[in-house]
Length: 319
Image (cartoon, rainbow, N blue to C red; front, side, top):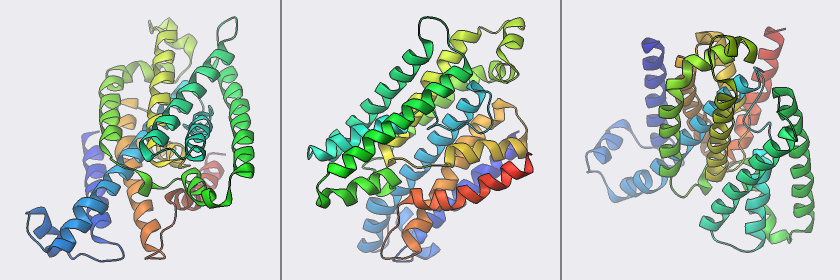
């Protein structure tokens, strides 16, 4: 367990250093070390400390949030192919953000509107799935799929009536773009707090993954645990979408691959998901801003191009 996390941590550190060094202006290891020591020329200091470092931190935090949320959703729904967006949270966040963009609001209000939209989607899905009785994993999943389709229709309508000069920014947000992240620290704080909250419950999550009836027979308080997972996964997803827009496949592919390699123990899957998800998005963002430098691609495009064939391969392998 410890060895696997150390290996993932070393890979994450290497990806972090690569992201800082590579770009339209390449920085050598010696120049990077000089900036870390507070030396180096002003151009490198500005490039690293004001541009690349915040963006890389935001990418790592966003990837970690999505991967942990995906791992929690897969336990909650008892479906290894569930992802953080399956319950329509990204659609609600997108509608909130696009409304703020249409109104000409600033970046802070756009982020706030996206978070509010995600929370509205969470309450809506849970309320509809609960109905007059209790809710089940399948009912929650089906409700989320329908609500997500509704949000998609609203997004399409908004894009159709949006003035053409506002469309590029809205489309980039929908595709996921870390360059819009203003500060990475809120996402980092949420990620760390979520790991601290969920790790004491990891043993119960292992039991819940086998089914609610078995978990109840072994003394697990199933319903409060499921509520905790749902609310926490929703908050993680909302924070990730608020930070960098809708970035797909990270929350689906990372936990699924880790389970194939490390097993299904949530005590290692959850922290490993945070490290691997952050690493994946850092590498994807590095590729997005270097492949056609000085132009940049939305990182969501890169994760989709990497995620689709990976998902199909995993699906074929698990057949």
